[in-house]
Image (cartoon, rainbow, N blue to C red; front, side, top):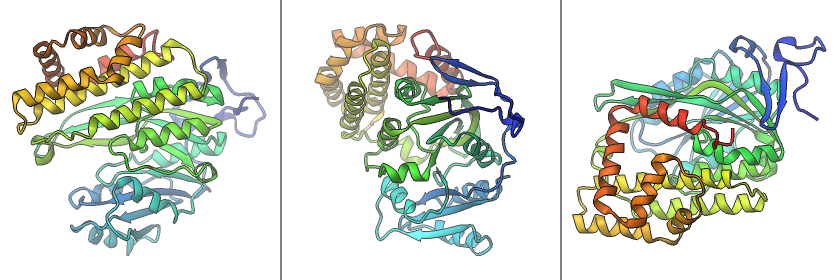
Length: 399
């Protein structure tokens, strides 16, 4: 039986909703004015804090200024050394909805989130980074959907905001997904596509039912930067119902800090991306998903991550040319990379070019390919993301 029986505009009328039952899920034809206005359930917002004294004011105020008022904001002090908690205490003294808890020691983002979960009282959880913000209507829209359809979790769109080194907005790009509800196996079938279009790999653009997370004992592992996708993979594994909202409900800031401007390549990054790949492939085999399209999407994401690893290697000014070439060749010859090269059936044009260069180990051309893409991403980020989303929405995307 479908989860949704009524359009949210027809609440209490007994009329059936305007839904199209397709193999993709239940498509909802609703306008933004339908959402919000349902009050009652308590929402828990979990915000780990460490070293964000420049940004935490905006993050906290974006929560306190929500049009939906029934929430608690759980600040997790991960033993920060700056004035972040002093700022948080200022707001906590004026608003009882803000509560601050301190970890016994610095544990990192993943464990700080887990630490915060033990104090929540809300029916749904929203995770938030302390250097980002959420639009004023975020909780209203999530609650409207949660009250009506009661899904195990909700995925929404988000906006990337690219800042200059002087903290000025340079450009922005919004990622949206259709408004739908998915059930049971269809949720699992959509994972690879949602990962491809980047809406599955973050925790902060989602709204999780507390009882669902508790029932399946779902927590974050310390696997930065793949902790969110590994957590969400387990969420997809257990979920029986999922709703997606075609609104941007999270603002993700990309800042050019001194750290990002002088990047040092982390040699554990590639191993973590391999862990990511293998967990996703193994889970799909466990789900008995045999379509080559799903695996092509998985391999495509892996190649994109390899591109990002190569980019970090090339940008590391501490590495010599021979060291960079050795690292790149090692990744090319890795068994997982070779497996993806051999098994991808219908790669996109750009991935096909990249694979061709990998097969022949054309290091100079690989570098040129990477630097070209990096230049476009850095200087024309919105256009790059727009073109990539249009390409990903093609016939092989699984939509």
